[in-house]
Length: 392
Ligand SMILES: [Mg+2]
Image (cartoon, rainbow, N blue to C red; front, side, top):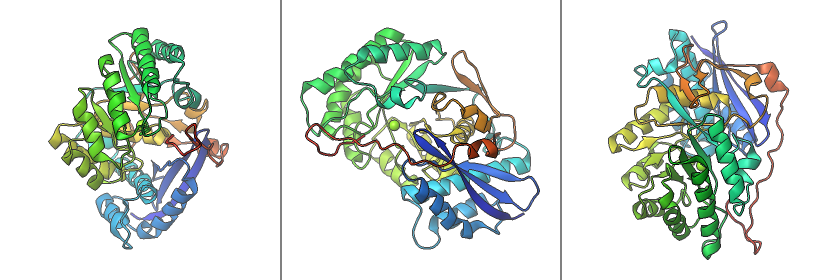
């Protein structure tokens, strides 16, 4: 069996362009789907997939580890940057889909079989509608509470919000008070049985990160995410040591070596590798082995498209340290038209039962994808009040 082509299919989904990767083989009807979505880098990733294709076309698609090594190490430049790492990830996910189809089993059975009966999911505030996640005013605590209550009505038992505002490296009391008011309002709206997560989006400086973490500590967050830049791993570790709240990070890290630093510094209690960026399912499994050794929880980053979600779920059903799956369901109204999925989401509790179809259990409707061709992503530019550049 040989790989005959590697295709990219771009599908514009409002905030991001989903990049689906299709690896074709010389066996009739046998192909695999992956995803390599990277906001604001769509053309670069499509080009990176084109650059990688000559390394693997003509090769046996079932030699996944061998092909991964080729893609990561060949032609001198390692695949540890975000663009090439994402391209490798998209292809790697598609290769696992093919291998599952070859053996007629879901991917999680290739990795030792299911380790749990179901996977819990959590939503973004607003279900993935970008205005409700990224454009809420932090002064509007009431709106945070309304959306949190709505998520509970929709069956979710956990949700994530961006209650920490954009802040300069040092600011006074106001942003801290805003964040605290939003989280307090949400906690009062949903009660103690619902898990709340706050994503700082690496907006704070290390010191502001500690101040936000301390202020939010009494509200029992399930986790506090990216309290400062991923380049400052020592500072993230300092935040983790300053509070009891579990700190989560890792969505911008590519490769096991970046995660090795995170583990060695005891920087986080929850790691969030993005399976579509970190090196695919192959690398995510290596990272999971390290996480297991450190007894750190895994909750892969997954705000992208449906292949990413299917990959995260297959991974979760075979990974003991996996705790919860990020899920967006209201980002675009036609999400379900683009994909057919093999797993079932229970409305009550928003838990997912395992996929029983081969591979990732999904099929992408290429005709529907063509209805949403590439568009430039909306600019998300952030400036502080004095005009200087901030972090989105
Ligand atoms: Mg995040």
